Amino acid sequence: MMYATRIKMKPGCYYSQSLLEIDEIYIDGCGYFKKALLHDYLQENPGTIKVNIAPYPNVIPAVSSRNEKYVRSSPDSYRHDDLLDLPRE
Image 1 (tube, rainbow, N blue to C red):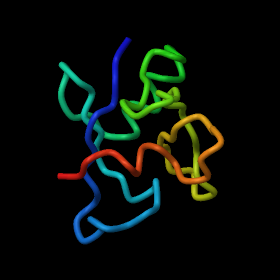
Image 2 (cartoon, rainbow, N blue to C red):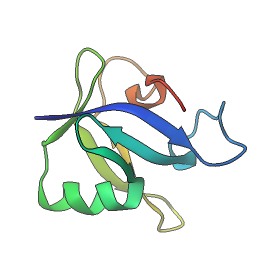
Image 3 (spheres, helix red, strand yellow):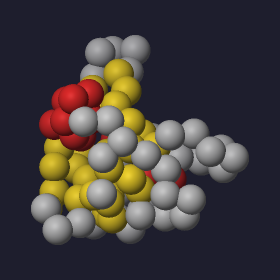
Image 4 (tube, helix red, strand yellow):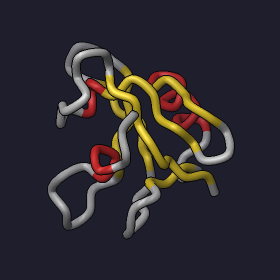
């Protein structure tokens, strides 16, 4: 199992709470990957990446209304997406 442990936001968006403003996600032991690349990977390999925050939800692919590929965590009882709670660089 792989875990998302950190995120990099787009320039000027460090404090944003929008998943679309995430630029790259750090996969522990592998490095940073662009969100579109992770989207494509997860289309072929669902359930292989989790957010490293309890309850460790899966990272899942999504597409915005503007056809932008991104990823998010699977919904849980917490209304805020767990990816946005990861440490930022």
